[in-house]
Each structure stands twice: as structure tokens, then as C-alpha cells.
Length: 117
Image (cartoon, one colour):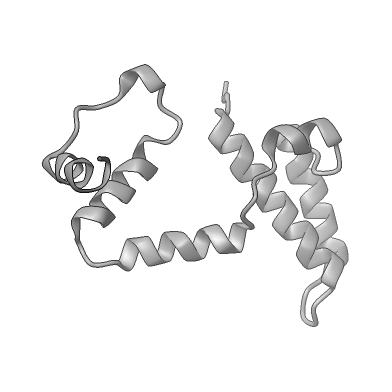
């Protein structure tokens, strides 16, 4: 039995919003009717409805899916620097319990010393 955590639900919600946006803009070469059926099926499969106001409040995020993807690509291809290591670690730990904070790395301690005064 598969149970999604909050981050996974937000991801599915964002994917469905993204696909709805494509469907609404009806770009040439996209079978809009098939896309709408796919969105309905995925919504039912995950019990997520992007038109439900309660789910919107709970699952909608401020950045669009394509923006997040661009951020991820930029981070993935960024040079290995202390700040990119910190950002990658932050991304890796999203969704973990706050009381399970790992000890700070040397890069994080340096960052804190320089910027957290």
C-alpha cells in the first residue's frame, strides 16, 4: 500500500496543474482530449483534484513546475562549491522531521560563521 508524503502530494499536484495549463493553452501537436483524460485518470489515481479549493490551499506552491525544474537543472549542473553543497543537502533533507537535523558540515559551519552574525 503506497502512502504519499506531503512533498510527493505537492509534486503530483504541481504536475497536474502543469498538464492542465498545457491542456488549456492547446498547443499545436498536443492531443488535448487525450491529455485531459490523462489528467483525470492521474487525479483519480492519486486522489488529487487541482480544482478543489481545500487541496489548493494545502498543496499549491508559489513556483511553477517548469520553474522548479529549471532550478533543479541549474543546481544539478552548478560547480561544486560550499553554497551548492549546502543547497543540495537542503534539497535532500526536505520532508525529514525537524528533530532529525543532521550535524553541520564544515561548509555549513564556515557559512554560518561568515553570514549568520
